[in-house]
Image 1: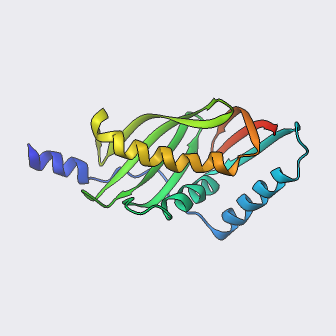
Image 2: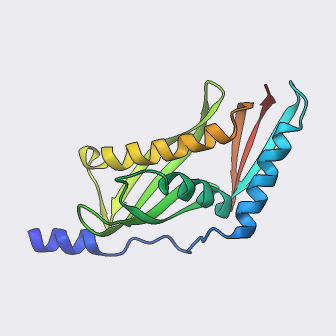
Image 3: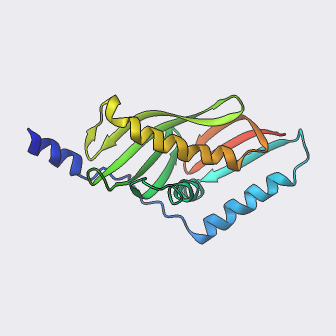
Length: 168
């Protein structure tokens, strides 16, 4: 049984396509965020984040956190949710995927974690806590980037997370 479980956890569970952050996506993201600062207070704001831009934000956070053992993190935005994926390098090396659903709470974007898998196995709730905490902290990075906006709505389209709100 242990050998079977190890094989299932070590089997790849990669997303359908690889999303790679690029210098272009990083530059586009910076431009979008800078534009928010130029909008007058109480004005409506819409910012559309692409797969690459959300991947950039995720990796920006993960790269600054000691002890986080996830490499090659990426985000895939789908109409039904956002999938975050990467390679967990310890305590066991395996591909991980976290299925989430964005929502608005207290004027901020939040992500409800709906499914976590390692390899081809879905993980039980107790085993997902650490991954959930890491991802949750990484996604707070989005709130920090949108600190001047009270978010009222999020919309998912293929490859795009649209965040709407009002400039504070």
